[in-house]
Length: 131
Image 1 (cartoon, rainbow, N blue to C red):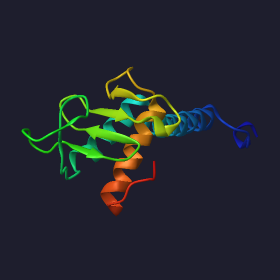
Image 2: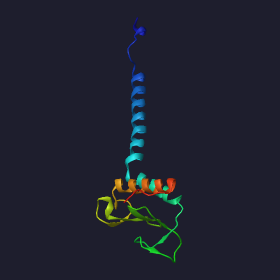
Image 3: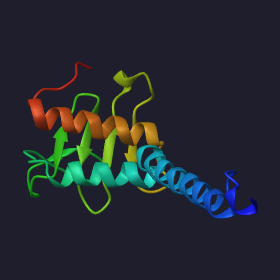
Image 4: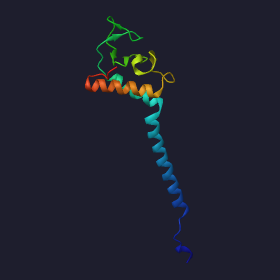
């Protein structure tokens, strides 16, 4: 009667433990993808790459007429697309006016996500949020 045990075996325990680690790894990846700074910068870059720009700006967000189109006025920000993406934040956002450089460890993830959402909204609907 020794072979008729119905309790959990070591193999079953290892399988359950492996499944738990697999689920945790997948959950951790999705958490990282949603909240990491690198992922936010990648999403902003993808949105900015596909946007059709109509104005030309210098690196500080000032409109010029001699360069190819690379910026858009989003009311809250003037977004400049280039090797280093930048945005000129206006004081109407509740924060002081500043020039933001979208590089790793230079801007808060919430700011990156906000600019990406506003740019995506402007591309989709052709309208700006009121300032």
